[in-house]
Image: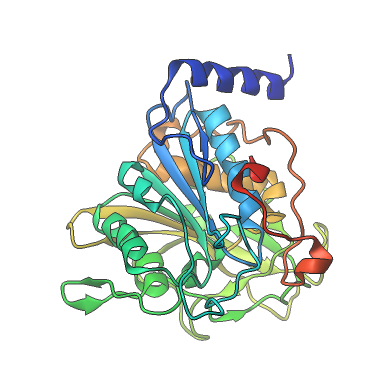
Length: 338
């Protein structure tokens, strides 16, 4: 029996024996976890950006985390007025209104939030769901554009001080494309000083076609409360075996930190600035992310170097970019991404 067939059987078995914490609804996707180290843990994944095909990447991660590791997963999407997942929406919306992410109330039952958003302008009641989560002490795993994941007012304060989501919660925000935008790939280099960190257990060959972000001013470094685990070396092209661009230094692309909101409980945070849908075709990027899920949830003793990070089902993501007609990016119902 193939690994994929075994995973499918396990997933079906989980459906029969385990109730998912979120009810079925056409506005989102649910994946019951069944048996595995993650059994009983609920992960909410939010796909809400316009460039890097998170609407394909996060359902793929949810399938992997549920079928191979036992986590209950719920995928939420930014949707248009017709209830379609719509990566072509403007930022901010053309009518001066708000974006819409149905199901954010289910963050209340989440043990972990995986966020992949970009310049979202949300109504107050939806922002409050994020603020409540940030105050909860529960962990956060943020992918690529999440460090500039919100646009417009972000009226969140701790101790009377305004909080910047990228800089303060995640430890950095997008400042520039350090690697060449859409023409220089990234080679991940493990940081020697932290090579024994559990998130790096079994991780190698971290590569992806998206470029390296700069998240702090030139001549500075990550904040002192961040621990860099992987540096990103820009390459001279977008191929796996392209040479390093020696004119550009390697910058941090994956790190850990803690965040303490108004609830007073410190939360584990992992931020990776790779993560386009095509980056996740790399087993190294998938393993880094899966390991980070375990670490975020305090399950680092369950991280093994040969954990299964194989894809579950077909995964043929579209390229990144904004030329939607050329790339074939069109609004679709959530079920199209199952």
